[in-house]
Image (cartoon, rainbow, N blue to C red):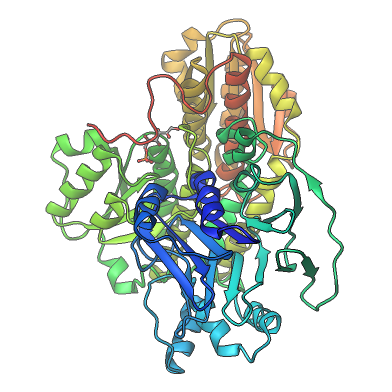
Length: 609
Ligand code: F6R
């Protein structure tokens, strides 16, 4: 997730570009830059660091001109650095572009363009777009943009500028947001409304496949075939703060709703088109490399640890390698048994959690091969680990982790599938079936978000209970742990998760009339046993909310309410069952008037031991 802006008008473009980017910093903040046409050439200033670093830099030299583009970056391909910052240019400097998204086929395009003599300076996927437009350009700017779109795959919103067209910006999008702000004698382009709200409330919301040619007095929108499109003006009536949250009341809710896209972005570049295999270009492991591991350690904290539990299940089930899992703050102090045949996987959204970082260093010191699963390119953990798999969730702002968790789950699933493919521990038909279901998962996550009203009602009804219990077996238990943590941290309700079979060894004593119990029952191998445990709590008059797959017709007979999620393979269903639990926590916290995005005593990044 990055933020992009564009301006064409009569004022100094840099003023809007920097101001607009400041409003978009929540979309990314590891580097920033602007490009302005100064009448002769495209003048670019960019730097690693937050917007403040760019502001400082352009104090010495502010690009002058009335047309320009800008970018605030959240690194995906290539670490945060000056050269990797956008805007990017072609060899001649005739074109400048800013991009939000991922160009999935950039490697093959880059090879092709290098062969033709193009000189690349950055490690980004985006730079191929600049060289590609240079390559196909024959004097017609619109035609060249179209030719670029014919070749690139992936998700993008893009703004192009070209020295030969000093009055024109061209923008387009696929699977990433883009708006055009309509001004008087000036027009604005941005990823999101907050960037332009101080300048105009009249906007065009761009749709996938539309191309807009934006000048100071006109905006011409067409489809990919050149057919004109008449856009409806969307009048923004939110205030600036609400606009930053995309119209949602809180970042947490926005991030819950971003999960279909976050999960899709994390999966699709790594899944072969025919769903037969996972391709991890970032690892490039061999059968021998994977077979040399006799043990895997997974180390993480909090929500990331809960994702690790699911990851352990995946790796053991699919790749048949024993996995130990530990909380990072415990790992270091228990003299772990590690050698060069150990693979240590650390999971961390921020990539900065000090306990996880220390555990990673300790693991390395003891001789393990290390792999980081993280959301932040260039973070301390990403830099320290031998190898990295990124979750492409975009910046997570709410303290309570949601989209990072679901992207961690799919990343661990793909890693396990990859290892099992190399080791030959999975039949090709089973792999194809699972990967086909994986392909459908982002849409299914979207479907779990379609009707939140029943969840809102449950949350309101139980928001003032002192205790809530979560139960499940197998993968359901791990999701229960995450559901309970979400409720605790943002609503301050005491919540505990138990392996459903364990209740009778003590905790059942706490179940009394009216206590809410959230019971997950999606795992077929333990389904009957879970039902027995549900009956045990029902017999103590608990109020039970069951979570089941859509094709389950049994659970509703034993519980007071049931929330259904789309049916998928039971290995993948944690990605769906966690969503109502996130929403339950969110609406319970709202009912209790809690500060959802910044819960008391907690910080987003825990950089102290
Ligand atoms: C809970 C939550 C925390 C983090 C934990 C690890 O919602 O966000 O439990 O998961 O502090 O943080 P990262 O993943 O950044 O290492």
